[in-house]
Image (cartoon, rainbow, N blue to C red; front, side, top):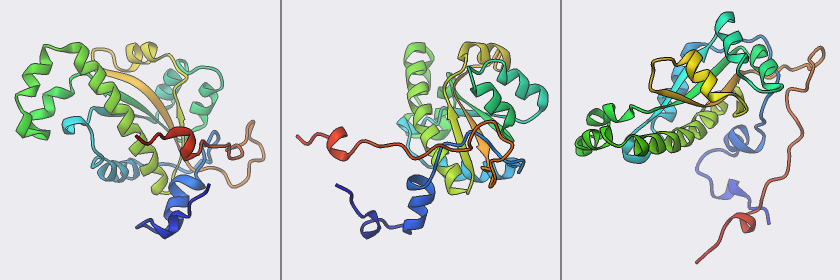
Amino acid sequence: MSIDTSQSAVVPDEVLDLMFREARTVNTFSDEDVSDEQVRAVWDLVRWGPTAFNSLPMRMLLVRSTEARERLASHMGGSNAAKTLRAPLSIVLAADLDFHEHLPRLAPHMAALRDQLADAPESRSATSRDNTFLQAGYLVVGLRAAGLHVGPMSGFDAPGVDADLFAGSPWRSIMVLNVGTAPADHEGFSMPATRDRQARLDFEDVARVV
């Protein structure tokens, strides 16, 4: 059963269309640039999304240069390499294993947790990864809200990316987002910018009430 969210939402229905109902994963992009200022503005919004004890472990590597793009593409699987080379901007999302170092600033009421986590690498790894995925969802929706199109990808050699682009760093890659604007005309592109909307599970398929 479909519910009319326009009767209950506190934001305009067209905003919900932009971020969810009409949004698509994009595979091919126009030549229109995505500036650092645009990404900064999105970050300044989505950073307010909740994470465990305000840990904010997600880090972003903005890949722009031809050399860096080719290095990243060499680690992408299948058609993801070509998608990455065509995008005006690729963002490698990573989990910072040393996120705990920022806790005295981000969660001063739990400042002692920094020292506790310093001796718990497995806990840090799990916490950083789980909450980075959470922040990645915020980021995708935030980029859409800014009028940008996104192509999230997990099909890549993460250890290879870490060794190549994050060597000597506590960052560990978990996802790559291609970001830009879908072309108005798909002529001349090897694949469509988007695919037809696929089915989604209903509430009854995903929820139990106890």
